[in-house]
Image 1 (tube, one colour):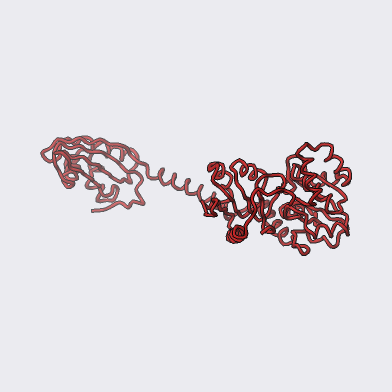
Image 2: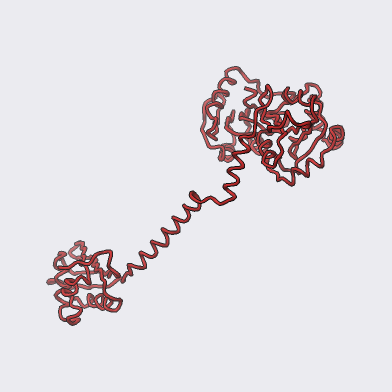
Length: 403
């Protein structure tokens, strides 16, 4: 008996069968052939068209339960639409199978080509998406990747304090002092190669020495932290000019136009000190007095004194996290409450609300995290670097330099 290949089938007839008694699969197949014989003429005789391969193997699945039989009939067809529909309709004339009453109902005629076409379209969409995401980065992505690699190669470590800096510090008459490594990278991205980062909460000796030899401009964020850095620099270094990023923005995120506008609008250090004095609030004045007394942001009175055991534990954990972009949450006994990605750190701290003694993570401390840590009564924030002065928060801020 000929069999139609599943690949060449154009349509599939799906029918349901209900039988008032117990029968087997061969009984159903026999009834299909027997009760349709001579009904449709010689050209559509089921045995003949199956022998010639125009319909495939008739599949019957039956289930006997509670004295009744239910099942399905599946017939693949390479006939045209009209002929396939006639074959399907002929199934419904079957009223008895063996000694039992039966009812056959055609559920649907499936167009195999439509199913294949839908599969092809969906698979093509998936392949195109993967190709666009992984195989074919656009020209801007390529340019950004190359530019980033060049900037990372250009950044150097300067002085005994090994501060992140551009390559032209020694060759330039002027130096731009910024807060952190990310600020240096952003300036390098836009062609400014004579910047150096403080890389911490206090002014390094390297910056103090540079200020004696070169014209120094402090380029700080447009927030309270930037004002505190200016205050500190004017106290311990020979600062010449001050430039601010736009209000509420950080140097690491501003555009080329905003960078040049800020540097063109820089003011003398003396004028910056006068403006800070006029606009400062009472708490700023108190902070300024602390800076004058001790000469650095270390004037902040720590809430808890760091023990040697804590220092060693913090340092070890911070080293474990290098390159992982992860964070440890510790309790009062320095037990790890959990480890989370830095991207989920703020959400996790907000959800816990309390019970966190210290947070150690591979990243940079910013204002948002400090605010959340204050609300959760966190004692220590420990990270690779910080954009926040320790004197501006009750949380004890530590970086790799402090450890």
